[in-house]
Image (cartoon, rainbow, N blue to C red):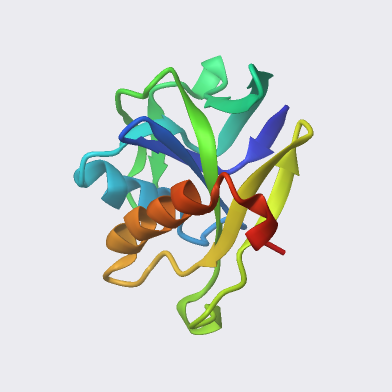
Length: 146
């Protein structure tokens, strides 16, 4: 299954950034890479189900490349795959809720925590790590999500 988005791996956990073009997916991924994350895929993400988990990878035609708005296509080293643990849905800064409702999205019959996210805030890279921690803590108790 292929989805539109950008994915990174942080400490072995995969995060999928989703949103329309220009919503901040690649920009946030670039900032996360600067803080130690690894790119998995930019623009398109392949999802496969294996052993009860969803794994993200890059289509071969765009592997190891990233579109950086205002610069162009740049070469980068991408991680081969990462297990998907969190989906962040990109929103404009003024549209993000102060207290978002965590939800579940389903890929290949597996539920994954998802939340709306403002990617252009100065603290966005820190908030990604906080969201990962919340997803890990609540991942076992998926009933806590709507």
